[in-house]
Length: 465
Image 1 (cartoon, helix red, strand yellow):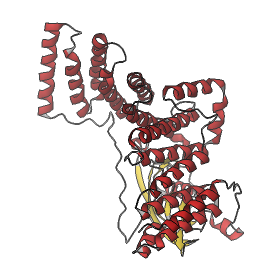
Image 2 (cartoon, rainbow, N blue to C red; image 1 turned 90 degrees about the horizontal axis):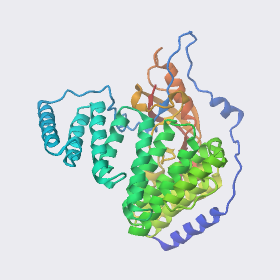
Image 3 (tube, rainbow, N blue to C red; image 1 turned 30 degrees about the vertical axis):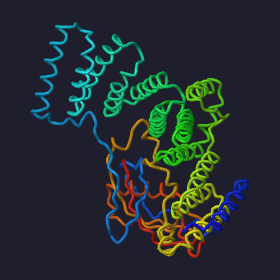
Protein backbone atom coordinates (compact mmCIF):
# COMPACT_ATOMS: atom_id res chain seq x y z
CA UNK A 1 0.00 0.00 0.00
CA UNK A 2 0.98 3.64 -0.30
CA UNK A 3 3.32 4.71 2.51
CA UNK A 4 2.89 8.37 3.53
CA UNK A 5 6.32 8.39 5.17
CA UNK A 6 7.96 7.44 1.89
CA UNK A 7 5.84 9.99 0.06
CA UNK A 8 7.02 12.73 2.42
CA UNK A 9 10.62 11.66 1.83
CA UNK A 10 10.07 11.89 -1.91
CA UNK A 11 8.58 15.36 -1.65
CA UNK A 12 11.59 16.44 0.41
CA UNK A 13 14.02 15.04 -2.17
CA UNK A 14 12.20 16.70 -5.04
CA UNK A 15 12.13 20.03 -3.24
CA UNK A 16 15.81 19.81 -2.44
CA UNK A 17 16.77 19.13 -6.02
CA UNK A 18 14.50 21.82 -7.40
CA UNK A 19 16.98 24.45 -6.22
CA UNK A 20 20.02 22.42 -7.15
CA UNK A 21 22.01 24.11 -9.88
CA UNK A 22 24.32 21.29 -10.79
CA UNK A 23 25.93 22.35 -14.06
CA UNK A 24 29.12 20.36 -14.07
CA UNK A 25 29.58 18.02 -16.98
CA UNK A 26 32.26 15.83 -15.45
CA UNK A 27 34.27 13.68 -17.75
CA UNK A 28 34.64 10.45 -15.80
CA UNK A 29 35.92 8.25 -18.58
CA UNK A 30 39.48 7.06 -18.11
CA UNK A 31 41.91 6.77 -20.99
CA UNK A 32 40.85 3.15 -21.37
CA UNK A 33 37.16 4.06 -21.45
CA UNK A 34 37.83 6.75 -24.03
CA UNK A 35 39.57 4.20 -26.20
CA UNK A 36 36.52 1.96 -25.85
CA UNK A 37 34.40 4.73 -27.34
CA UNK A 38 35.88 4.02 -30.77
CA UNK A 39 33.37 1.84 -32.59
CA UNK A 40 34.56 -1.55 -33.69
CA UNK A 41 32.95 -1.03 -37.09
CA UNK A 42 35.28 -0.83 -40.06
CA UNK A 43 34.17 0.98 -43.19
CA UNK A 44 35.20 -0.22 -46.65
CA UNK A 45 38.12 1.54 -48.24
CA UNK A 46 36.77 1.30 -51.76
CA UNK A 47 35.84 4.47 -53.63
CA UNK A 48 32.23 3.36 -53.85
CA UNK A 49 29.80 5.57 -51.93
CA UNK A 50 27.32 3.56 -49.88
CA UNK A 51 24.23 5.04 -48.18
CA UNK A 52 24.45 5.83 -44.50
CA UNK A 53 21.61 5.57 -42.02
CA UNK A 54 19.74 8.87 -41.81
CA UNK A 55 17.09 7.92 -39.22
CA UNK A 56 17.25 5.47 -36.32
CA UNK A 57 14.48 4.26 -34.06
CA UNK A 58 14.58 3.75 -30.32
CA UNK A 59 16.63 0.61 -29.55
CA UNK A 60 14.50 -2.39 -28.62
CA UNK A 61 15.90 -5.06 -26.24
CA UNK A 62 16.45 -8.59 -27.52
CA UNK A 63 14.97 -10.81 -24.81
CA UNK A 64 15.32 -14.60 -24.87
CA UNK A 65 16.13 -14.48 -28.61
CA UNK A 66 12.66 -13.13 -29.36
CA UNK A 67 12.37 -10.66 -32.21
CA UNK A 68 11.48 -7.19 -30.92
CA UNK A 69 8.31 -5.65 -32.33
CA UNK A 70 8.60 -2.22 -33.93
CA UNK A 71 5.62 0.02 -34.66
CA UNK A 72 4.60 0.09 -38.31
CA UNK A 73 5.06 3.24 -40.35
CA UNK A 74 2.38 4.57 -42.68
CA UNK A 75 3.86 4.19 -46.16
CA UNK A 76 0.79 5.37 -48.04
CA UNK A 77 2.27 7.62 -50.73
CA UNK A 78 1.35 8.80 -54.20
CA UNK A 79 3.18 5.85 -55.66
CA UNK A 80 1.13 3.32 -53.70
CA UNK A 81 -1.94 3.23 -55.90
CA UNK A 82 -4.44 0.65 -54.82
CA UNK A 83 -6.32 -1.31 -57.43
CA UNK A 84 -9.82 0.15 -57.20
CA UNK A 85 -12.46 -2.41 -56.37
CA UNK A 86 -15.57 -2.84 -58.46
CA UNK A 87 -17.62 -1.56 -55.54
CA UNK A 88 -15.52 1.62 -55.28
CA UNK A 89 -15.80 2.24 -59.02
CA UNK A 90 -19.55 1.76 -58.84
CA UNK A 91 -19.74 4.15 -55.86
CA UNK A 92 -17.79 6.80 -57.81
CA UNK A 93 -20.11 6.46 -60.79
CA UNK A 94 -23.16 6.85 -58.56
CA UNK A 95 -21.77 9.96 -56.84
CA UNK A 96 -20.75 11.54 -60.15
CA UNK A 97 -24.19 10.94 -61.51
CA UNK A 98 -25.65 12.49 -58.36
CA UNK A 99 -23.35 15.54 -58.74
CA UNK A 100 -24.47 16.00 -62.35
CA UNK A 101 -28.14 15.86 -61.36
CA UNK A 102 -27.56 18.29 -58.48
CA UNK A 103 -25.81 20.76 -60.81
CA UNK A 104 -28.63 20.54 -63.33
CA UNK A 105 -31.20 21.20 -60.61
CA UNK A 106 -29.42 23.76 -58.41
CA UNK A 107 -26.47 25.05 -60.37
CA UNK A 108 -22.70 24.74 -59.93
CA UNK A 109 -22.81 26.22 -56.41
CA UNK A 110 -25.63 24.17 -54.95
CA UNK A 111 -24.94 23.55 -51.22
CA UNK A 112 -25.82 19.88 -51.71
CA UNK A 113 -22.63 19.51 -53.75
CA UNK A 114 -20.40 19.90 -50.67
CA UNK A 115 -21.27 16.53 -49.20
CA UNK A 116 -21.31 14.80 -52.59
CA UNK A 117 -17.90 16.12 -53.69
CA UNK A 118 -16.39 15.31 -50.31
CA UNK A 119 -17.74 11.76 -50.61
CA UNK A 120 -16.11 11.40 -54.03
CA UNK A 121 -12.84 12.66 -52.56
CA UNK A 122 -13.05 10.10 -49.75
CA UNK A 123 -13.41 7.23 -52.24
CA UNK A 124 -10.53 8.53 -54.35
CA UNK A 125 -8.41 8.89 -51.23
CA UNK A 126 -9.12 5.31 -50.21
CA UNK A 127 -7.95 4.23 -53.69
CA UNK A 128 -4.67 6.11 -53.25
CA UNK A 129 -5.57 8.58 -56.00
CA UNK A 130 -4.67 11.63 -53.92
CA UNK A 131 -4.37 14.09 -56.80
CA UNK A 132 -7.93 13.39 -57.86
CA UNK A 133 -9.06 13.48 -54.23
CA UNK A 134 -7.49 16.91 -53.77
CA UNK A 135 -9.38 18.25 -56.78
CA UNK A 136 -12.64 16.97 -55.32
CA UNK A 137 -11.95 18.33 -51.83
CA UNK A 138 -10.84 21.68 -53.26
CA UNK A 139 -14.08 22.11 -55.15
CA UNK A 140 -16.10 21.00 -52.13
CA UNK A 141 -14.37 23.69 -50.03
CA UNK A 142 -15.08 26.40 -52.62
CA UNK A 143 -18.75 25.48 -52.76
CA UNK A 144 -18.89 25.51 -48.96
CA UNK A 145 -17.35 28.99 -48.87
CA UNK A 146 -19.80 30.36 -51.41
CA UNK A 147 -22.76 29.10 -49.41
CA UNK A 148 -21.63 29.33 -45.77
CA UNK A 149 -18.95 32.00 -45.90
CA UNK A 150 -15.20 32.05 -45.45
CA UNK A 151 -13.49 30.27 -42.55
CA UNK A 152 -16.56 28.38 -41.32
CA UNK A 153 -16.59 25.26 -39.21
CA UNK A 154 -18.21 23.29 -42.06
CA UNK A 155 -14.83 23.24 -43.80
CA UNK A 156 -13.00 21.44 -40.97
CA UNK A 157 -13.49 17.82 -42.19
CA UNK A 158 -12.67 18.89 -45.76
CA UNK A 159 -9.45 20.62 -44.72
CA UNK A 160 -8.47 17.61 -42.63
CA UNK A 161 -8.88 15.37 -45.67
CA UNK A 162 -6.81 17.79 -47.76
CA UNK A 163 -4.04 17.55 -45.13
CA UNK A 164 -4.19 13.75 -45.26
CA UNK A 165 -3.79 13.65 -49.05
CA UNK A 166 -0.98 16.20 -49.14
CA UNK A 167 0.76 14.20 -46.39
CA UNK A 168 0.46 11.04 -48.46
CA UNK A 169 2.04 12.95 -51.36
CA UNK A 170 4.79 14.25 -49.03
CA UNK A 171 4.03 17.81 -50.15
CA UNK A 172 4.99 19.28 -46.80
CA UNK A 173 4.68 22.98 -47.64
CA UNK A 174 1.02 22.44 -48.51
CA UNK A 175 0.52 20.33 -45.38
CA UNK A 176 1.93 23.20 -43.34
CA UNK A 177 -0.32 25.75 -45.04
CA UNK A 178 -3.48 23.75 -44.42
CA UNK A 179 -2.57 22.90 -40.83
CA UNK A 180 -2.30 26.63 -40.16
CA UNK A 181 -5.60 27.29 -41.92
CA UNK A 182 -7.34 24.47 -40.04
CA UNK A 183 -6.22 25.89 -36.71
CA UNK A 184 -7.24 29.40 -37.77
CA UNK A 185 -10.79 28.19 -38.45
CA UNK A 186 -11.00 26.35 -35.15
CA UNK A 187 -9.54 29.21 -33.14
CA UNK A 188 -11.94 31.74 -34.69
CA UNK A 189 -14.88 29.44 -34.03
CA UNK A 190 -14.10 28.26 -30.50
CA UNK A 191 -11.84 30.94 -29.05
CA UNK A 192 -8.79 30.31 -26.86
CA UNK A 193 -10.52 28.90 -23.75
CA UNK A 194 -13.22 26.61 -25.14
CA UNK A 195 -12.51 22.93 -24.41
CA UNK A 196 -13.24 22.12 -28.07
CA UNK A 197 -9.98 23.84 -29.01
CA UNK A 198 -7.91 21.28 -27.05
CA UNK A 199 -7.62 18.67 -29.86
CA UNK A 200 -6.71 21.46 -32.29
CA UNK A 201 -3.88 22.60 -30.00
CA UNK A 202 -2.62 19.05 -29.82
CA UNK A 203 -2.81 18.47 -33.57
CA UNK A 204 -0.98 21.68 -34.48
CA UNK A 205 1.63 21.01 -31.81
CA UNK A 206 2.22 17.52 -33.19
CA UNK A 207 2.54 18.91 -36.70
CA UNK A 208 5.13 21.47 -35.62
CA UNK A 209 7.17 18.69 -34.01
CA UNK A 210 6.88 16.63 -37.20
CA UNK A 211 7.84 19.64 -39.34
CA UNK A 212 10.85 20.19 -37.10
CA UNK A 213 11.79 16.53 -37.48
CA UNK A 214 11.85 16.70 -41.28
CA UNK A 215 13.55 20.12 -41.28
CA UNK A 216 10.71 21.99 -42.97
CA UNK A 217 11.43 25.69 -43.41
CA UNK A 218 14.29 27.95 -42.41
CA UNK A 219 13.11 28.81 -38.89
CA UNK A 220 13.09 25.48 -37.09
CA UNK A 221 13.38 27.20 -33.72
CA UNK A 222 9.93 28.67 -34.32
CA UNK A 223 8.59 25.15 -34.78
CA UNK A 224 9.81 24.16 -31.32
CA UNK A 225 8.54 27.37 -29.76
CA UNK A 226 5.10 26.91 -31.31
CA UNK A 227 4.89 23.26 -30.25
CA UNK A 228 5.80 24.11 -26.67
CA UNK A 229 3.22 26.90 -26.47
CA UNK A 230 0.50 24.70 -27.98
CA UNK A 231 1.22 21.70 -25.73
CA UNK A 232 1.29 23.92 -22.65
CA UNK A 233 -2.05 25.47 -23.57
CA UNK A 234 -3.59 22.03 -24.18
CA UNK A 235 -2.43 20.70 -20.79
CA UNK A 236 -3.63 23.86 -19.03
CA UNK A 237 -7.10 23.67 -20.60
CA UNK A 238 -7.48 19.96 -19.83
CA UNK A 239 -6.64 20.61 -16.19
CA UNK A 240 -9.01 23.59 -16.03
CA UNK A 241 -12.01 21.99 -17.73
CA UNK A 242 -11.67 18.32 -16.82
CA UNK A 243 -9.18 18.05 -13.97
CA UNK A 244 -5.86 16.30 -13.77
CA UNK A 245 -7.50 12.88 -13.71
CA UNK A 246 -8.47 13.27 -17.38
CA UNK A 247 -6.75 10.66 -19.54
CA UNK A 248 -5.18 13.33 -21.75
CA UNK A 249 -3.48 15.29 -18.99
CA UNK A 250 -0.30 13.25 -18.56
CA UNK A 251 0.20 12.62 -22.32
CA UNK A 252 -0.02 16.38 -22.88
CA UNK A 253 2.57 16.98 -20.16
CA UNK A 254 4.79 14.40 -21.83
CA UNK A 255 4.44 16.37 -25.05
CA UNK A 256 5.80 19.41 -23.23
CA UNK A 257 8.78 17.30 -22.16
CA UNK A 258 9.22 16.10 -25.73
CA UNK A 259 9.38 19.65 -27.09
CA UNK A 260 11.57 20.81 -24.20
CA UNK A 261 14.05 18.04 -24.98
CA UNK A 262 14.45 19.27 -28.55
CA UNK A 263 14.72 22.88 -27.36
CA UNK A 264 17.57 21.88 -25.07
CA UNK A 265 19.26 19.88 -27.83
CA UNK A 266 19.15 22.75 -30.33
CA UNK A 267 20.31 25.95 -28.59
CA UNK A 268 21.59 27.40 -31.87
CA UNK A 269 18.06 27.33 -33.30
CA UNK A 270 16.56 28.86 -30.18
CA UNK A 271 19.08 31.71 -30.15
CA UNK A 272 17.68 32.87 -33.52
CA UNK A 273 14.31 33.60 -31.91
CA UNK A 274 15.68 36.80 -30.41
CA UNK A 275 15.29 38.47 -33.81
CA UNK A 276 12.43 40.95 -33.89
CA UNK A 277 10.49 39.25 -36.70
CA UNK A 278 10.44 35.96 -34.81
CA UNK A 279 9.33 37.62 -31.58
CA UNK A 280 6.32 38.99 -33.43
CA UNK A 281 5.34 35.56 -34.80
CA UNK A 282 5.61 33.98 -31.35
CA UNK A 283 3.61 36.79 -29.76
CA UNK A 284 0.75 36.37 -32.26
CA UNK A 285 0.44 32.65 -31.53
CA UNK A 286 0.66 33.17 -27.76
CA UNK A 287 -2.14 35.75 -27.94
CA UNK A 288 -4.31 33.42 -30.05
CA UNK A 289 -4.13 30.64 -27.47
CA UNK A 290 -4.06 32.85 -24.37
CA UNK A 291 -0.67 31.53 -23.31
CA UNK A 292 2.06 33.51 -21.56
CA UNK A 293 5.01 34.11 -23.87
CA UNK A 294 8.43 33.50 -22.32
CA UNK A 295 11.43 35.41 -23.61
CA UNK A 296 12.69 32.14 -25.07
CA UNK A 297 11.37 28.57 -25.18
CA UNK A 298 12.58 26.68 -22.12
CA UNK A 299 14.50 23.44 -22.43
CA UNK A 300 15.66 21.73 -19.26
CA UNK A 301 13.46 23.77 -16.91
CA UNK A 302 10.26 23.22 -18.94
CA UNK A 303 10.84 19.47 -19.03
CA UNK A 304 11.62 19.36 -15.32
CA UNK A 305 8.48 21.31 -14.46
CA UNK A 306 6.25 19.04 -16.56
CA UNK A 307 7.77 15.89 -15.06
CA UNK A 308 7.26 17.29 -11.56
CA UNK A 309 3.62 17.98 -12.42
CA UNK A 310 3.24 14.32 -13.38
CA UNK A 311 4.76 13.27 -10.04
CA UNK A 312 2.44 15.63 -8.19
CA UNK A 313 -0.54 14.03 -9.90
CA UNK A 314 0.73 10.51 -9.19
CA UNK A 315 1.07 11.33 -5.49
CA UNK A 316 -2.68 11.86 -5.36
CA UNK A 317 -3.30 8.34 -6.67
CA UNK A 318 -2.96 4.92 -5.06
CA UNK A 319 -0.69 3.49 -7.77
CA UNK A 320 2.73 3.23 -6.11
CA UNK A 321 4.40 1.73 -9.18
CA UNK A 322 3.18 4.59 -11.40
CA UNK A 323 4.55 7.09 -8.87
CA UNK A 324 7.91 5.30 -8.77
CA UNK A 325 7.99 5.24 -12.56
CA UNK A 326 7.33 8.98 -12.74
CA UNK A 327 10.10 9.67 -10.24
CA UNK A 328 12.45 7.48 -12.32
CA UNK A 329 11.56 9.51 -15.41
CA UNK A 330 12.53 12.72 -13.63
CA UNK A 331 15.77 10.99 -12.63
CA UNK A 332 16.25 10.10 -16.31
CA UNK A 333 15.79 13.77 -17.19
CA UNK A 334 18.53 14.77 -14.74
CA UNK A 335 20.80 12.03 -16.07
CA UNK A 336 20.37 13.34 -19.61
CA UNK A 337 21.86 16.65 -18.49
CA UNK A 338 24.66 15.10 -16.42
CA UNK A 339 23.08 16.07 -13.10
CA UNK A 340 24.07 12.70 -11.75
CA UNK A 341 23.78 13.31 -8.03
CA UNK A 342 20.19 14.48 -8.47
CA UNK A 343 19.44 11.50 -10.71
CA UNK A 344 20.92 8.99 -8.28
CA UNK A 345 18.97 10.41 -5.34
CA UNK A 346 15.72 10.11 -7.26
CA UNK A 347 16.49 6.60 -8.51
CA UNK A 348 17.09 5.61 -4.90
CA UNK A 349 13.83 7.19 -3.72
CA UNK A 350 11.88 5.32 -6.42
CA UNK A 351 13.63 2.07 -5.45
CA UNK A 352 12.80 2.59 -1.76
CA UNK A 353 9.19 3.43 -2.57
CA UNK A 354 8.80 0.02 -4.22
CA UNK A 355 10.67 -1.76 -1.43
CA UNK A 356 7.63 -1.61 0.88
CA UNK A 357 5.29 -3.21 -1.63
CA UNK A 358 4.21 -6.83 -1.29
CA UNK A 359 5.94 -7.92 -4.51
CA UNK A 360 8.76 -5.41 -4.15
CA UNK A 361 11.52 -7.42 -5.85
CA UNK A 362 9.45 -8.06 -8.99
CA UNK A 363 8.45 -4.39 -9.18
CA UNK A 364 12.03 -3.20 -8.72
CA UNK A 365 13.25 -5.56 -11.41
CA UNK A 366 10.49 -4.47 -13.77
CA UNK A 367 11.50 -0.81 -13.44
CA UNK A 368 15.26 -1.10 -12.91
CA UNK A 369 16.30 -4.63 -13.87
CA UNK A 370 17.35 -3.81 -17.45
CA UNK A 371 18.79 -0.78 -19.19
CA UNK A 372 16.24 1.45 -20.93
CA UNK A 373 16.92 3.93 -23.70
CA UNK A 374 15.98 7.42 -22.59
CA UNK A 375 14.41 9.83 -23.03
CA UNK A 376 11.25 7.76 -23.18
CA UNK A 377 9.56 10.87 -24.50
CA UNK A 378 11.01 10.37 -27.99
CA UNK A 379 8.19 8.78 -29.96
CA UNK A 380 9.48 9.21 -33.50
CA UNK A 381 12.65 8.07 -35.30
CA UNK A 382 15.62 10.33 -34.66
CA UNK A 383 17.36 12.00 -37.60
CA UNK A 384 21.08 11.25 -37.50
CA UNK A 385 22.07 12.61 -40.90
CA UNK A 386 20.92 16.05 -42.06
CA UNK A 387 20.82 14.82 -45.67
CA UNK A 388 17.29 13.66 -44.86
CA UNK A 389 15.94 17.18 -44.40
CA UNK A 390 12.55 17.45 -46.02
CA UNK A 391 11.99 13.69 -45.88
CA UNK A 392 10.54 11.28 -43.38
CA UNK A 393 11.65 7.70 -42.71
CA UNK A 394 8.55 6.38 -44.45
CA UNK A 395 10.04 7.50 -47.77
CA UNK A 396 13.34 5.63 -47.23
CA UNK A 397 14.52 2.02 -47.18
CA UNK A 398 14.28 0.21 -43.85
CA UNK A 399 16.97 -1.93 -42.23
CA UNK A 400 17.81 -3.56 -38.90
CA UNK A 401 20.98 -4.23 -36.94
CA UNK A 402 21.61 -6.07 -33.66
CA UNK A 403 24.20 -4.48 -31.40
CA UNK A 404 25.81 -5.34 -28.09
CA UNK A 405 27.21 -2.64 -25.82
CA UNK A 406 28.08 -1.63 -22.29
CA UNK A 407 26.04 0.92 -20.35
CA UNK A 408 27.97 2.71 -17.60
CA UNK A 409 26.46 3.65 -14.27
CA UNK A 410 26.03 7.14 -15.68
CA UNK A 411 23.98 5.88 -18.63
CA UNK A 412 26.68 6.28 -21.28
CA UNK A 413 27.20 3.77 -24.09
CA UNK A 414 30.59 2.03 -24.42
CA UNK A 415 32.12 -0.94 -26.28
CA UNK A 416 29.64 -1.16 -29.14
CA UNK A 417 29.92 -4.30 -31.26
CA UNK A 418 27.84 -5.64 -34.14
CA UNK A 419 25.98 -8.93 -33.76
CA UNK A 420 24.33 -8.96 -37.18
CA UNK A 421 26.04 -10.33 -40.29
CA UNK A 422 27.98 -7.58 -42.03
CA UNK A 423 28.49 -7.33 -45.76
CA UNK A 424 29.55 -4.74 -48.30
CA UNK A 425 25.97 -3.47 -48.61
CA UNK A 426 25.26 -2.76 -44.95
CA UNK A 427 28.59 -2.10 -43.24
CA UNK A 428 28.37 1.67 -43.72
CA UNK A 429 24.84 1.75 -42.34
CA UNK A 430 25.80 -0.42 -39.37
CA UNK A 431 28.68 1.93 -38.65
CA UNK A 432 26.54 5.06 -38.71
CA UNK A 433 23.90 3.41 -36.51
CA UNK A 434 26.55 2.40 -34.01
CA UNK A 435 27.95 5.91 -33.87
CA UNK A 436 24.46 7.40 -33.51
CA UNK A 437 23.73 5.00 -30.66
CA UNK A 438 26.36 6.81 -28.62
CA UNK A 439 24.15 9.91 -28.55
CA UNK A 440 21.56 7.98 -26.53
CA UNK A 441 21.56 7.90 -22.76
CA UNK A 442 20.27 4.77 -21.04
CA UNK A 443 18.69 4.37 -17.64
CA UNK A 444 21.23 2.15 -15.87
CA UNK A 445 20.42 -1.01 -13.96
CA UNK A 446 20.01 -0.50 -10.22
CA UNK A 447 21.33 -2.83 -7.54
CA UNK A 448 20.08 -2.02 -4.05
CA UNK A 449 18.96 1.31 -5.44
CA UNK A 450 22.39 2.22 -6.81
CA UNK A 451 23.22 2.51 -10.56
CA UNK A 452 25.74 -0.04 -11.82
CA UNK A 453 27.48 -0.66 -15.14
CA UNK A 454 26.25 -3.58 -17.25
CA UNK A 455 27.90 -5.33 -20.19
CA UNK A 456 26.59 -7.16 -23.24
CA UNK A 457 23.28 -5.34 -23.44
CA UNK A 458 21.72 -6.64 -26.65
CA UNK A 459 19.40 -4.43 -28.65
CA UNK A 460 17.95 -4.35 -32.14
CA UNK A 461 17.83 -1.00 -33.88
CA UNK A 462 15.66 -0.16 -36.86
CA UNK A 463 17.14 2.41 -39.23
CA UNK A 464 16.37 4.05 -42.55
CA UNK A 465 18.74 4.94 -45.38
